[in-house]
Length: 270
Ligand SMILES: NC(=O)c1ccc[n+]([C@@H]2O[C@H](COP(=O)([O-])OP(=O)(O)OC[C@H]3O[C@@H](n4cnc5c(N)ncnc54)[C@H](OP(=O)(O)O)[C@@H]3O)[C@@H](O)[C@H]2O)c1
Image (cartoon, rainbow, N blue to C red; front, side):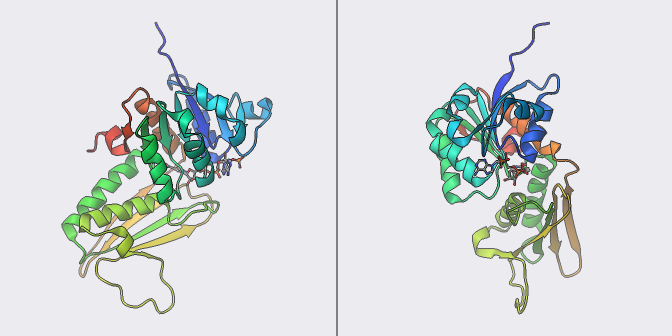
């Protein structure tokens, strides 16, 4: 039987938890992905890179040749490395697929994604799990149906090494609530409460970040009414659920027209 050509992928953030999960899944038979190398803080000896499933790992300053060879670049790193790869090396990414899972990105970073999408198919997602993307849809519907009389609070839990809070997924869920309410998240967001926090205003969207242990990612959206409560929740059992979604995204963007896509497009939720 004729074997399908594999898509050549470079992973930015190769040595991290997600980078290693991506390499493990890509190595499985029939993945359709060939990981040709990774980018991290420093270059690694090929022996060590090989142990985590990468033929080569380059530092951000020496990765240009590798990016040139890629058909799709997948970024799960930090805002700093994201800016180097997608900002400083933007010209090298033209026409290639770009999948971005890095969280904690700022407005300027979203502009970089928009610029990249003029020449490349780009799919950023705060969460690549199918369940969470469905949850976002359900949360928006619930917020629209219940309205701001039901107070919306978002509680998320992650492992102790996570550096940003609230999680990108929690913010995404908050945006879904705000869309459902017809408000702007920036105007109604409230992160945690302590001391004389005052009475809760109608329409506020609260965020609470729990950190500890090895929690992969839990998200709970509470709609608290006068006489009833609705809770919509998702728990990720293993980070391979994100890696699997990101590799699906890498295959999906490959060869697609330039544009800014989302997991909604990939999952047909639109
Ligand atoms: N969208 C999703 O579904 C999803 C799911 C899980 C995680 N995430 C996000 O993905 C990102 C990575 O998560 P993780 O758990 O894999 O993190 P991690 O274990 O800390 O790994 C980070 C990776 O990025 C590299 N890196 C970070 N800063 C760098 C810099 N300034 N220069 C060069 N390399 C740098 C690290 O290289 P060194 O090892 O050399 O330091 C490492 O390879 C985070 O933003 C996380 O929130 C998203």
